[in-house]
Image 1 (spheres, rainbow, N blue to C red):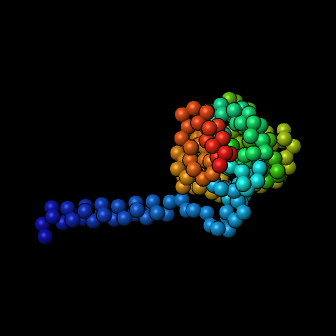
Image 2 (cartoon, helix red, strand yellow):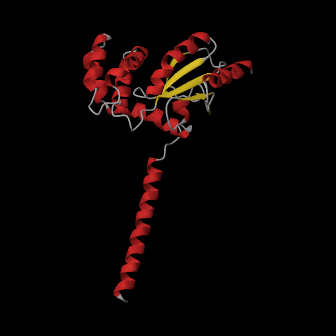
Image 3 (cartoon, rainbow, N blue to C red):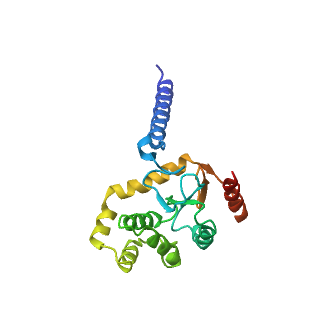
Length: 218
């Protein structure tokens, strides 16, 4: 066999092997749907361990917000969502799910801090703290983990338990569950809203309230 032909065949073989490896990597990293046990008794579009901020009952519409605590748009929506929750109080289930974006240096650190606080039943307080202070730590390329620990201290959390939760791989895994479910739901950016399992395409705020009003009218 000529050297040039042999080299060509080797190159083709390498390309084929790389393609096969790429397929395996994609399959291994493809998000999987939650099991029946993980969604048992859960509201539509959530897991049993999801953070239900407002619970109006199984017959009420369920609005899920996928968010990133370092996302400026999420911070801008924060007071709007507070008004929306008040307006639909008792008529709408509202659930927060994590979706930290890779382009935000401290988004995962923030999610870990909020989840660690949630383990001490202080989810909403840390959630609000992140958005209230985002301008102080967001869009920076240094870790804000110490800053977030300071917030935990301000909220009166058990710091030993907080530190243990931050270091526990299960805490990150809990966040990644939300991220995987978000990807399955078609989430690409934040904030993304999913109403009764259907991802909403919003051009303006009234698109969200119209969708909720329509769900309530059914």
